Image 1 (cartoon, protein in one colour):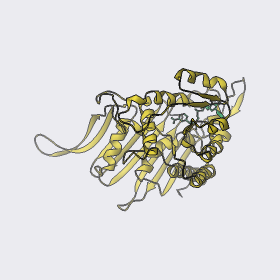
Image 2 (cartoon, protein in one colour; image 1 turned 90 degrees about the vertical axis):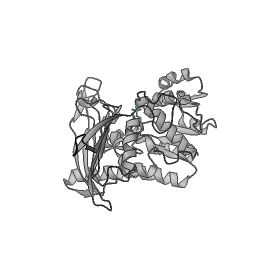
Image 3 (cartoon, helix red, strand yellow; image 1 turned 60 degrees about the horizontal axis):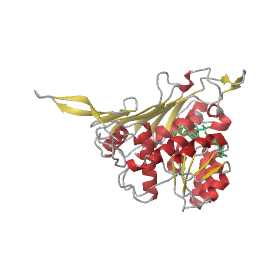
Image 4 (cartoon, rainbow, N blue to C red; image 1 turned 45 degrees about the horizontal axis):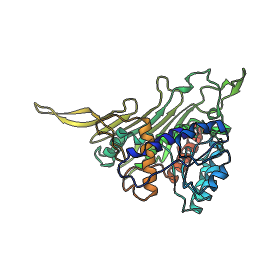
Length: 367
Ligand SMILES: NC(=O)c1ccc[n+]([C@@H]2O[C@H](COP(=O)([O-])OP(=O)(O)OC[C@H]3O[C@@H](n4cnc5c(N)ncnc54)[C@H](O)[C@@H]3O)[C@@H](O)[C@H]2O)c1
């Protein structure tokens, strides 16, 4: 992910009138070979295998940290204590206890601005869908769902790596890996499940160890969380699912909300298209429900030089996430959609812990 972020920063001039002008000035990895790629940027003054040396650098104001989940707490809290601003990676600590300690460290160092990475809602189509819901245009919500599906683990011969081992990825497994992507928008819309029932599946108990043997693969591959969101108007079901084994899906993020006055759906499977449900008056009279397909174009949270009619993709969503992060850090995001806040990341861990409890007790649990 480090290379993806550095590439987005190189495209910064695409943003119109952004308050910041970031440069990648330092890179750290314990594997020196992983840093070679960054030499071509021409802006990096410090290459180091020592994270403390990076934190000591006065050339660094903001750090982005993408490491194994078991390393999050130590590295995030060190960055925060060093007075750096931080765009952290999900799941924001390996478990609920780690996430709580990270949030505590932020409270002890309020000068440090911290958000967590989640880029999929920055697709223009996702923003259009979010704005429609925020406007109240779909009326009282009947039901909503958000999902993030991969199929990379469908290959049972794929050797084990840290993301498939609970001691590195966390007991929550796929929820730690993909859950924040599927919960960012619901939580930002205020759709926080009050109780839930979870179906967690450990579909692949072992994998090749890459050395001719096998290794235990003790993480959940798929998770489906069926929650109830209580509102003043009454409750509605919120379904959130994350799958590493969703055959046929490569990196599919889908958001769908249906209300009494309309509905909206966006999926990265058709990234140009937003589907909107409205009541439609027929030319000869009479009213029917109709799904319309609207093309989203290129513009997302922060305006760019790209013509409005052009297509947007994954790397554009990364640029927009960073534009939102640095604009909010500069106090200039306004009411535009922002990155995941620490309290939202913490809430996702409370949701995962409840999902594990629901799975173990085979029952509906409060969150
Ligand atoms: N936002 C997204 O779409 C997205 C996508 C992939 C991964 N991620 C997240 O990014 C994080 C990393 O995942 P990944 O797939 O990039 O992992 P990875 O294993 O490919 O990369 C991690 C890197 O960290 C380095 N590292 C380990 N210990 C270090 C230390 N003490 N100091 C400096 N560097 C160290 C490793 O050498 C490695 O190069 C995870 O939290 C993961 O969930 C996010």
